[in-house]
Length: 338
Image 1 (cartoon, rainbow, N blue to C red):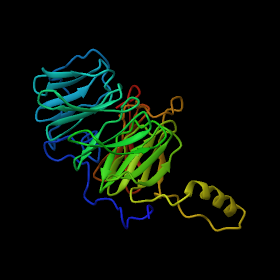
Image 2: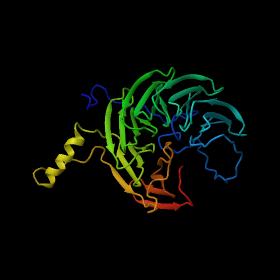
Image 3: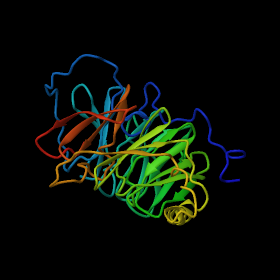
Image 4: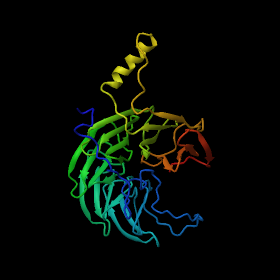
């Protein structure tokens, strides 16, 4: 029965999209737009302030109630006034903070390379709880329905109670999980370093789908109309996968045999691979074919209207969501890691 939804189906309407006043997931929403502002005023690019930390910053900021939250490789997590750039508080961890924060109901959630997922009071930075994993936590958490979801370098996807940090379930992907999860209608989507996209029941961690790409999936999946967009590192490919797809039993083992029998004309062609994916090979720099983002969850695709936007090497792409055609590409002066 685990391959059906008769007894343990996903909870419809359970999403990690941010509610007003929260920042519940990496880059704010399921489209990964990175913005909580609906203003149409064109920015002028004039710096209002700068804030110096003691290390590199791979943690993307989250902004809630006039406060900017982010981590640094100086081992600290910061809260800075968005209007003035003045520090409000900082919290020291045991290693780099490359994970990007989520803020829900006055609590800040983020991971550290010391192996902990932390929950802090957003107002004063006091620790509420910390959950220990075996290795670093570079994945950025997603929060919904009183649960916190994130991946670890130990290969597990975790679901914790948001109030006390107690483990509800974990799923072993058997490879690093630096991608940040998205939860859509009760289904969690996340990528792994071995080149897989997983879909799990967000309530109990039950396996639903595994789609294998050809390279590592650092990027965090973006979602629009039940279609999941993500890129794989190494070959410059953007994938679109049906989020409602299921991996049928023994698919990986049986499909290869089925294909061989089909080529020998002793069996019909096998059905489409689970998720019915489509893919676009982006036109990248031949001297640098890898996609230009770091392993800290930056560089995911975003969706807006009928377009998909993504980066690769030193280029920014706009892709039509329906035809999957590249509409335009902008070339920057160096690799893009954002």
